[in-house]
Amino acid sequence: MIEVTQLTKVFDTTRAVDAVSFTVSREEIFGLLGPNGAGKTTTIRMLTGILKPTEGHARIGGYDIQEHPLEAKQLMGIVPEMANAYVDLSPWRNLLLMGELYGIPRKEREKKAGSLIDLFALSEKMHHRVRTLSKGMHQRVTVAMALMNTAQVLLLDEPTSGLDVESARLIRDIIRTSREEGTAVLLTTHNLQEADELCSRIAIMNHGKIMAVERPENLKRAIKCSTSVEVAFAQEVGEHEVWFESVNRVERKGDRLRLYTEAPELVIPLVVDYSRSTQNLILSLSTIGPDLEDVFLQVTGGGQ
Image (tube, rainbow, N blue to C red; front, side, top):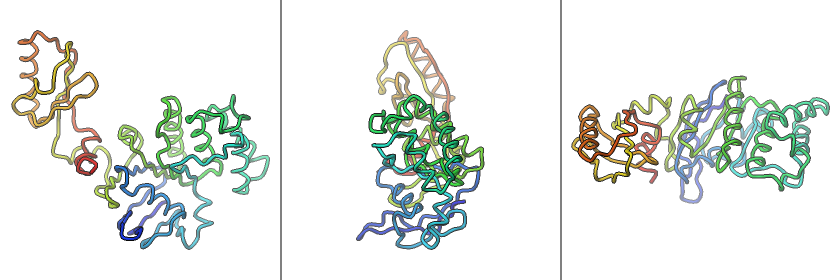
């Protein structure tokens, strides 16, 4: 449903997007990850026709976005980086307007708008101006607007950024439901846990280029730092106190310490010995594989 071929965008002397290629199929959530300035939003803007590529092509449902913009846009639902609901209209009026723009008959658009109001838990605020709503409610309206035309392709640029837990969870659930109903979803996000939970494939961008495209689990298996030991003590412990032999790196994760190692079988006994010698009780101890954050940092060189 989405086909990107050697897509490139140059601003003056800066290659914001550099020969990017990928595809997204029906019933797939494809994640586009990268640090600020990696080129994610510029890629989305070219896919939606807002920006003209310097080189390359982007096709939505087989339609080139530059040659057949109307046909391509009729297939898309778009949630841009900045919320695009009309703030002086209510959620109800925003949805009806979006339905009208897509040429949906009145009775059908009212029925669809009503179902989306219920789905996004907006009933109590459906006749309030959007400018009076919380950020989470505002974003719910924006995502609902993207679904008014029963889109075959959803382009979501940071849809849960800065939202409260309830709103973020609701939007993630709706993204999953859209995929189950046959929609192709392209999602940009800074939230690595979100990408891990939602995406069947992930592309990691840095400096305008795609550094890797793979399933999340395959990305995790590919990196060198394969395992770590995570431990929580009853009393606080400094990172330097558990930098044992065979430990490559120590990081604090909330109230836990993560000891990166290629030999967890050697590190675990040292953790237990430390606990006994200091009489500092171990509250939890586990061996875990690399997470998506480890992959991201290795592929992007720490996001630099």
